[in-house]
Length: 216
Image (cartoon, rainbow, N blue to C red; front, top):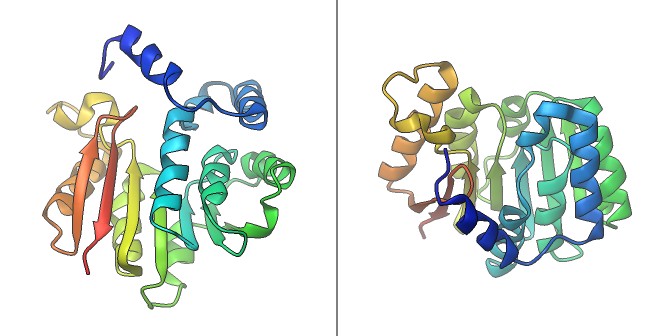
C-alpha cells in the first residue's frame, strides 16, 4: 500500500536529511546479504526521525527491540550523548554480526549493549524503575503488546516509545487480515490509543509509526 503518491514519496525522501556514506553502505550490504528480508530495515527518513526524537528529549538511556543489521541502532545511538546507553535486543547472531561491524565503524560500539535472547526475557529482567528515556519497537509483531507493556512501565515521565509498522501495509483496516501479527498490531494500537499513561500520535510515515510520550 502506498500511503502517498509514489512521486510524493520520492519528494519526501529527497527533502529529508540524506544518509551519510556509512548508512548508505550498510543499506547496500543489507540488501545484498539478506535478500527479501532487507525490507525489515527502516528507511533513511525514519532513521533521521529517530535521531531527532532522541536528541529533542535529551535521552540518555534507550532500548531497541529488533536490531536486524543495525541501521536503526546507529540512528538512535547517534542521538545519545557520549555517556548515553542503548540496550539493543535481538535473537539473530547472523544479522547482528553485520550491525556490530557498523557500530564499531560509526564509533558507537561503546554506547550499544547487544543482548541476544528473546526480547521479552531481556525486558522482564530489567529493573522496574522508570529510567528509560526512549524506546523503539520494530521486531516480531505478535510480541508488540508484551514489549509495549514492559517498556511503558519503565519509561520515565516525558520519555518516548516509538512503534514501527503499525499499519501493516494497510492490513490493520482489512477485516480479512487475521493472522497473529495483524491481531497483535491492532491490539497494541488500540491499547496505546486508550492508554491514560501516555499521549500518542500515529503518523503515516512509511508503514506507520506511533509515537507515545509518558505523561508526568
